[in-house]
Image 1 (cartoon, rainbow, N blue to C red):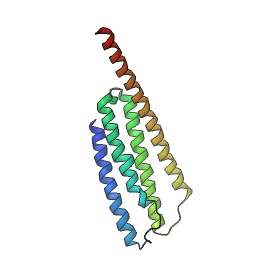
Image 2 (tube, helix red, strand yellow; image 1 turned 180 degrees about the horizontal axis):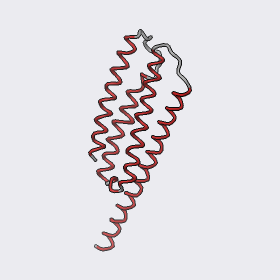
Image 3 (cartoon, rainbow, N blue to C red; image 1 turned 45 degrees about the horizontal axis):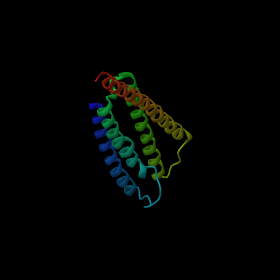
Image 4 (cartoon, rainbow, N blue to C red; image 1 turned 180 degrees about the vertical axis):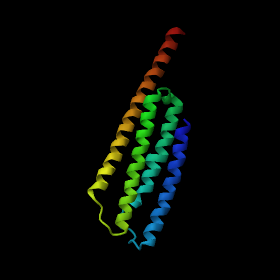
Length: 148
């Protein structure tokens, strides 16, 4: 549970920092206001996929004890978080290139795709862990009703 708490703080700080970086980097490079760059959405991705999702995962961990199945929980935690960091890191990289007037390469898209794959596999591991925890909770409840 502590890992999810610290992950939420990590993403909150990164998300807020990414917003400041976007504003200052585009201003310093005289990037036209209103023109799109990946930098403009990196902070929202960090806050939504990182901060808010970590808080949701934390609540579900508290309710269902997902980390009791250590293997599934660790798979989810690390795959998901590596995916978010890689995906947003590539967004920032791509956004910086756009602001500086440079072209991005297919490599950037490929790395972003890997980040998305990690997020997806992490979410699948989370749903599997949640499904097992819900089944265990239902089983305990059924046994309590039958025995009581």
